[in-house]
Image 1 (spheres, rainbow, N blue to C red):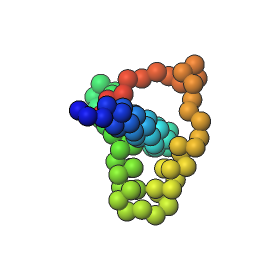
Image 2: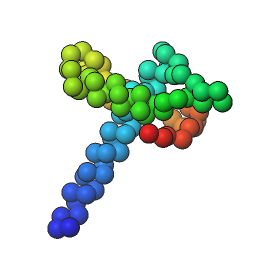
Image 3: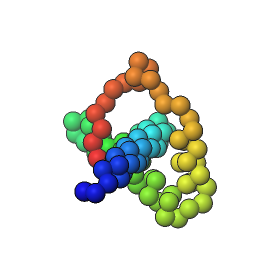
Image 4: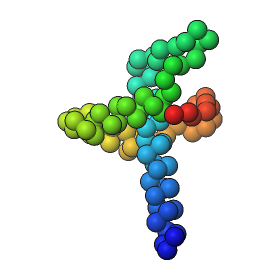
Length: 89
């Protein structure tokens, strides 16, 4: 590796993308509850739901992408006001 700064920039960009997908998925699950299996767990993770929505919005454009982009401007909930959950893709 000749320029280690590139890896740190790439890692930072991936962290932002993961947080963005999670935010989009959380917004969608507030409106539409995800399907659950027999044990009461979600079949698809919040992050994967956000990834599906974001990838379709980026692919097809339109107002959906701009709605997803506006979500980045909104402040995140602090840890004391949200329920902590593990993130799985």
